[in-house]
Image (cartoon, rainbow, N blue to C red; front, top):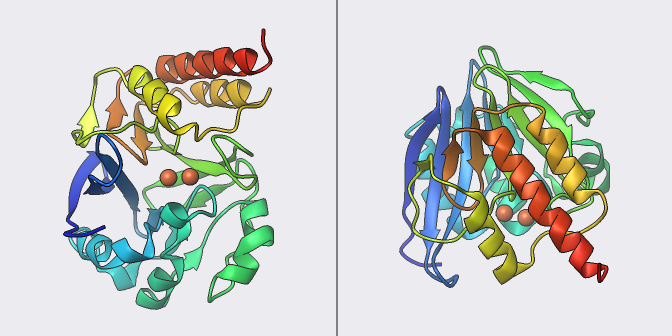
Length: 245
Ligand SMILES: [Fe+2]
Ligand SMILES: [Fe+2]
Protein backbone atom coordinates (compact mmCIF):
# COMPACT_ATOMS: atom_id res chain seq x y z
CA UNK A 1 0.00 0.00 0.00
CA UNK A 2 1.27 3.46 -0.83
CA UNK A 3 0.28 7.05 -0.08
CA UNK A 4 -1.73 6.01 2.90
CA UNK A 5 -4.11 8.31 4.61
CA UNK A 6 -6.26 7.36 7.55
CA UNK A 7 -9.42 9.31 8.29
CA UNK A 8 -11.17 9.48 11.64
CA UNK A 9 -14.95 9.55 12.20
CA UNK A 10 -16.98 9.17 15.37
CA UNK A 11 -19.63 6.55 14.48
CA UNK A 12 -21.29 6.38 17.90
CA UNK A 13 -20.73 8.31 21.11
CA UNK A 14 -17.08 7.80 22.02
CA UNK A 15 -16.49 5.18 19.31
CA UNK A 16 -14.16 6.23 16.51
CA UNK A 17 -13.54 4.62 13.14
CA UNK A 18 -10.01 4.94 11.76
CA UNK A 19 -10.22 4.16 8.05
CA UNK A 20 -7.52 3.59 5.47
CA UNK A 21 -8.51 3.20 1.83
CA UNK A 22 -6.63 1.18 -0.75
CA UNK A 23 -7.33 0.79 -4.46
CA UNK A 24 -5.23 -2.38 -4.62
CA UNK A 25 -8.39 -4.43 -4.18
CA UNK A 26 -10.84 -4.36 -7.12
CA UNK A 27 -13.50 -1.77 -6.42
CA UNK A 28 -11.45 -0.20 -3.65
CA UNK A 29 -11.32 -1.39 -0.06
CA UNK A 30 -11.19 0.04 3.45
CA UNK A 31 -9.30 -1.23 6.46
CA UNK A 32 -10.97 0.11 9.58
CA UNK A 33 -9.95 0.08 13.20
CA UNK A 34 -12.22 1.15 16.03
CA UNK A 35 -11.27 3.07 19.15
CA UNK A 36 -13.62 2.77 22.11
CA UNK A 37 -12.91 5.66 24.43
CA UNK A 38 -13.97 5.42 28.05
CA UNK A 39 -11.73 6.25 31.01
CA UNK A 40 -9.54 3.60 29.39
CA UNK A 41 -9.32 3.19 25.62
CA UNK A 42 -9.46 0.02 23.58
CA UNK A 43 -8.35 -0.43 19.97
CA UNK A 44 -10.18 -3.11 17.98
CA UNK A 45 -8.04 -4.37 15.06
CA UNK A 46 -4.40 -3.31 14.87
CA UNK A 47 -4.13 -2.83 11.10
CA UNK A 48 -1.24 -4.27 9.14
CA UNK A 49 2.31 -3.36 10.10
CA UNK A 50 2.71 -1.21 6.97
CA UNK A 51 -0.33 0.83 7.99
CA UNK A 52 0.95 1.53 11.50
CA UNK A 53 2.44 5.02 10.92
CA UNK A 54 -0.78 6.23 9.33
CA UNK A 55 -3.12 4.53 11.81
CA UNK A 56 -1.16 5.62 14.87
CA UNK A 57 -1.18 9.20 13.61
CA UNK A 58 -4.96 8.87 13.22
CA UNK A 59 -5.31 7.45 16.74
CA UNK A 60 -3.36 10.42 18.10
CA UNK A 61 -6.28 12.62 16.95
CA UNK A 62 -8.47 10.69 19.43
CA UNK A 63 -6.11 9.86 22.31
CA UNK A 64 -2.36 9.92 22.83
CA UNK A 65 -1.33 6.46 21.51
CA UNK A 66 0.79 5.81 24.61
CA UNK A 67 -2.40 6.00 26.69
CA UNK A 68 -3.96 3.01 24.93
CA UNK A 69 -4.96 0.43 27.56
CA UNK A 70 -6.26 -2.50 25.51
CA UNK A 71 -5.45 -3.89 22.09
CA UNK A 72 -7.99 -6.36 20.75
CA UNK A 73 -8.98 -7.99 17.48
CA UNK A 74 -11.45 -10.53 16.16
CA UNK A 75 -8.90 -13.16 15.14
CA UNK A 76 -5.22 -13.55 14.34
CA UNK A 77 -4.65 -12.33 10.75
CA UNK A 78 -2.46 -9.54 9.31
CA UNK A 79 -5.13 -6.84 9.05
CA UNK A 80 -6.62 -7.75 12.43
CA UNK A 81 -3.46 -8.33 14.45
CA UNK A 82 -0.38 -7.67 12.27
CA UNK A 83 0.75 -4.46 13.97
CA UNK A 84 0.06 -5.76 17.48
CA UNK A 85 3.62 -5.58 18.73
CA UNK A 86 4.12 -2.09 17.30
CA UNK A 87 1.15 -0.96 19.40
CA UNK A 88 2.46 -2.75 22.49
CA UNK A 89 5.77 -0.93 22.02
CA UNK A 90 4.04 2.43 21.47
CA UNK A 91 1.77 2.03 24.51
CA UNK A 92 3.72 0.64 27.49
CA UNK A 93 0.54 0.12 29.54
CA UNK A 94 -1.36 -1.71 26.81
CA UNK A 95 -2.28 -5.38 27.00
CA UNK A 96 -3.82 -7.76 24.50
CA UNK A 97 -7.45 -8.63 25.30
CA UNK A 98 -8.90 -11.47 23.25
CA UNK A 99 -10.89 -14.63 23.80
CA UNK A 100 -9.77 -17.98 25.13
CA UNK A 101 -8.58 -19.54 21.87
CA UNK A 102 -6.93 -16.33 20.68
CA UNK A 103 -5.01 -16.13 23.92
CA UNK A 104 -3.92 -19.74 24.35
CA UNK A 105 -3.36 -20.66 20.67
CA UNK A 106 -1.49 -17.54 19.57
CA UNK A 107 -1.43 -14.68 22.07
CA UNK A 108 0.85 -16.34 24.59
CA UNK A 109 3.37 -16.91 21.78
CA UNK A 110 3.01 -13.99 19.39
CA UNK A 111 2.69 -10.94 21.65
CA UNK A 112 5.84 -9.29 23.04
CA UNK A 113 4.06 -9.02 26.39
CA UNK A 114 1.75 -11.62 27.88
CA UNK A 115 -1.94 -11.00 27.11
CA UNK A 116 -4.36 -10.34 29.95
CA UNK A 117 -6.19 -13.47 31.11
CA UNK A 118 -8.34 -14.81 28.29
CA UNK A 119 -11.80 -13.28 28.00
CA UNK A 120 -14.57 -15.77 28.57
CA UNK A 121 -17.55 -15.77 26.21
CA UNK A 122 -19.88 -13.04 27.52
CA UNK A 123 -17.27 -11.44 29.79
CA UNK A 124 -17.46 -7.66 30.21
CA UNK A 125 -14.44 -5.39 30.02
CA UNK A 126 -15.33 -2.18 31.83
CA UNK A 127 -13.49 0.80 30.35
CA UNK A 128 -15.14 3.31 32.68
CA UNK A 129 -18.06 4.87 30.82
CA UNK A 130 -17.99 2.13 28.18
CA UNK A 131 -18.81 -1.54 28.71
CA UNK A 132 -17.57 -4.04 26.18
CA UNK A 133 -18.92 -7.57 26.15
CA UNK A 134 -16.76 -10.18 24.41
CA UNK A 135 -18.63 -12.73 22.31
CA UNK A 136 -17.00 -15.90 20.98
CA UNK A 137 -17.97 -16.62 17.35
CA UNK A 138 -15.69 -19.54 16.42
CA UNK A 139 -15.11 -19.78 12.64
CA UNK A 140 -17.51 -16.87 12.01
CA UNK A 141 -16.73 -15.33 9.65
CA UNK A 142 -13.38 -17.12 9.77
CA UNK A 143 -10.77 -18.17 12.31
CA UNK A 144 -11.12 -20.76 15.05
CA UNK A 145 -10.40 -18.05 17.61
CA UNK A 146 -12.97 -15.59 16.19
CA UNK A 147 -14.84 -13.23 18.47
CA UNK A 148 -16.22 -9.71 18.57
CA UNK A 149 -17.37 -6.99 20.95
CA UNK A 150 -20.72 -5.48 21.87
CA UNK A 151 -20.44 -2.06 23.48
CA UNK A 152 -23.43 -1.89 25.77
CA UNK A 153 -23.79 1.85 26.49
CA UNK A 154 -24.12 2.69 22.77
CA UNK A 155 -25.46 -0.70 21.58
CA UNK A 156 -22.62 -0.86 19.07
CA UNK A 157 -21.61 -4.23 17.69
CA UNK A 158 -18.00 -4.23 16.54
CA UNK A 159 -18.61 -7.00 14.07
CA UNK A 160 -15.19 -7.31 12.43
CA UNK A 161 -15.20 -8.94 9.00
CA UNK A 162 -18.97 -9.54 9.03
CA UNK A 163 -20.68 -7.36 6.39
CA UNK A 164 -17.39 -6.79 4.53
CA UNK A 165 -18.05 -4.71 1.41
CA UNK A 166 -15.87 -2.94 -1.13
CA UNK A 167 -15.74 0.64 -2.37
CA UNK A 168 -14.76 4.15 -1.39
CA UNK A 169 -17.67 4.30 1.00
CA UNK A 170 -18.81 6.83 3.63
CA UNK A 171 -17.87 6.32 7.28
CA UNK A 172 -21.47 5.66 8.30
CA UNK A 173 -24.48 4.69 6.24
CA UNK A 174 -28.16 4.02 6.83
CA UNK A 175 -28.46 2.32 3.43
CA UNK A 176 -28.57 -1.45 3.02
CA UNK A 177 -25.30 -3.22 3.81
CA UNK A 178 -26.53 -6.77 3.20
CA UNK A 179 -26.56 -6.73 -0.61
CA UNK A 180 -23.04 -5.17 -0.76
CA UNK A 181 -21.85 -7.79 1.75
CA UNK A 182 -23.26 -10.62 -0.37
CA UNK A 183 -21.52 -9.17 -3.44
CA UNK A 184 -18.19 -9.10 -1.57
CA UNK A 185 -18.74 -12.67 -0.39
CA UNK A 186 -19.23 -13.67 -4.04
CA UNK A 187 -15.93 -11.94 -4.83
CA UNK A 188 -13.78 -13.09 -1.90
CA UNK A 189 -15.41 -16.18 -0.42
CA UNK A 190 -13.97 -15.10 2.93
CA UNK A 191 -16.52 -16.73 5.19
CA UNK A 192 -16.26 -20.22 6.60
CA UNK A 193 -19.52 -21.91 5.58
CA UNK A 194 -20.68 -24.38 8.20
CA UNK A 195 -23.93 -25.38 9.85
CA UNK A 196 -23.01 -22.91 12.63
CA UNK A 197 -22.48 -19.84 10.44
CA UNK A 198 -26.07 -18.62 10.16
CA UNK A 199 -27.12 -19.53 13.73
CA UNK A 200 -24.11 -17.66 15.15
CA UNK A 201 -25.00 -14.52 13.17
CA UNK A 202 -28.67 -14.86 14.13
CA UNK A 203 -27.70 -14.95 17.80
CA UNK A 204 -25.99 -11.58 17.37
CA UNK A 205 -29.31 -10.15 16.14
CA UNK A 206 -30.62 -10.84 19.66
CA UNK A 207 -28.36 -8.06 20.95
CA UNK A 208 -30.46 -5.56 18.92
CA UNK A 209 -27.51 -3.34 18.06
CA UNK A 210 -28.11 0.28 17.02
CA UNK A 211 -24.82 0.55 15.13
CA UNK A 212 -22.53 -1.92 13.41
CA UNK A 213 -18.81 -1.16 13.33
CA UNK A 214 -17.78 -2.94 10.13
CA UNK A 215 -14.08 -3.61 9.55
CA UNK A 216 -14.17 -3.31 5.76
CA UNK A 217 -16.77 -0.84 4.47
CA UNK A 218 -19.14 1.70 5.97
CA UNK A 219 -20.38 1.41 9.50
CA UNK A 220 -24.15 0.99 9.61
CA UNK A 221 -26.84 2.64 11.69
CA UNK A 222 -30.40 1.40 11.53
CA UNK A 223 -32.21 -1.87 12.10
CA UNK A 224 -29.09 -3.93 12.76
CA UNK A 225 -31.04 -6.97 13.98
CA UNK A 226 -32.85 -7.15 10.64
CA UNK A 227 -29.55 -6.74 8.78
CA UNK A 228 -27.98 -9.56 10.81
CA UNK A 229 -30.95 -11.85 10.18
CA UNK A 230 -30.81 -11.09 6.45
CA UNK A 231 -27.07 -11.79 6.41
CA UNK A 232 -27.69 -15.06 8.25
CA UNK A 233 -30.34 -16.01 5.68
CA UNK A 234 -27.82 -15.36 2.90
CA UNK A 235 -25.29 -17.67 4.54
CA UNK A 236 -27.98 -20.28 5.09
CA UNK A 237 -28.64 -20.19 1.36
CA UNK A 238 -24.93 -20.45 0.54
CA UNK A 239 -24.43 -23.34 2.96
CA UNK A 240 -27.36 -25.28 1.53
CA UNK A 241 -26.12 -24.61 -1.99
CA UNK A 242 -22.68 -25.96 -0.99
CA UNK A 243 -24.38 -29.22 0.03
CA UNK A 244 -26.15 -29.38 -3.32
CA UNK A 245 -29.56 -28.77 -1.76
FE1 LIG B 1 -10.22 -11.63 8.80
FE1 LIG C 1 -10.40 -8.05 8.23
